[in-house]
Image (cartoon, rainbow, N blue to C red; front, top):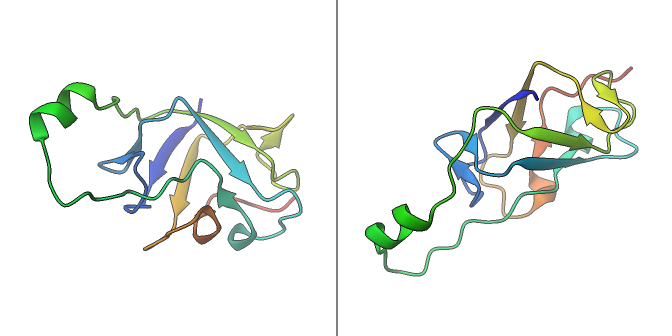
Length: 110
């Protein structure tokens, strides 16, 4: 599994630049550049105006340095049978509110 660094602070799965999902989906079937890819697992972080930190910490998923990455960007040099083979992956998306506002910065066209 690749090491995954996520800079998308607006995603609910981002926990201190790590992802709490076991499997991340990267989109961009016809992508030839990084900006044409997206983290299809992105879900915008919602705030409800109050916080119950005891509840949140007991029910929060644990983030991991490594995640399985299912990649639809078939033109990426790291894609092997729709699985990412890069050693490290950077997901970007400053102030994203939808998955289209994110991208896989590690993407390299074949």
